Length: 288
Image (tube, rainbow, N blue to C red):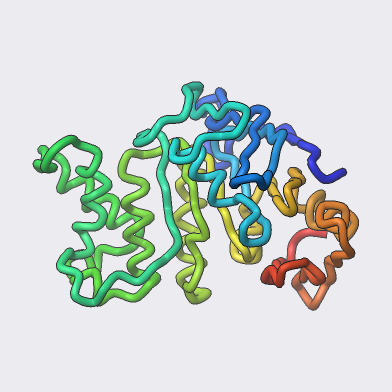
């Protein structure tokens, strides 16, 4: 596959449920998209259709436009060219069909909110004016907290929780409106392996059980590779899109970067080496 090419493998319905019960229309449609930062072109000619329940990993060096792509889908960053539709509609700010999970950033120890208050912001925060609790809000918050495995610390001050515990709350907040699309911006950064696995399991469960599509920006493919359907790899103003086996090859990444890049096997892992700009290695053990 050449750099800049698009490949969309046919998938039989979303995972984890009877395909007849799933929505069939694409969750996300990006057509002819281009983005510039000043005079620099981040990428152009991006066509991407994401189906219900599909898990797309977005890889590339810092500054390649991965987060900017998410911002465009959220309606926060206009495209230089092309269109984006979510659920058939043009993008706009505050779209309840989209859940957003940011990087883990520690909350201050003296933060006054409890853990449940963080999740409640997702349930009540989309209302205009002061969010007055409605009947059923408490039950919804409790269900979200239970779903992300945070019930045992729901009433503790959020600033006293670990980074992984805080990140579970952000996931609960993102799931408040039962979104059809989850945008994940390096949500596993700075988490230990146990919490990486826990957060990944929650996100994967949401797509398997409810058919939510996932766009997952990451520097390390290893924790999510077993869940990934396709990879969008962006580098140097170009991109390649395909299955993990198609994208994570020495030939493909060498063509993408325009310099020798090698995908090597080290035990049960594959390690990408030679990437310019000191990009962190991507390791995984399932692709060929």
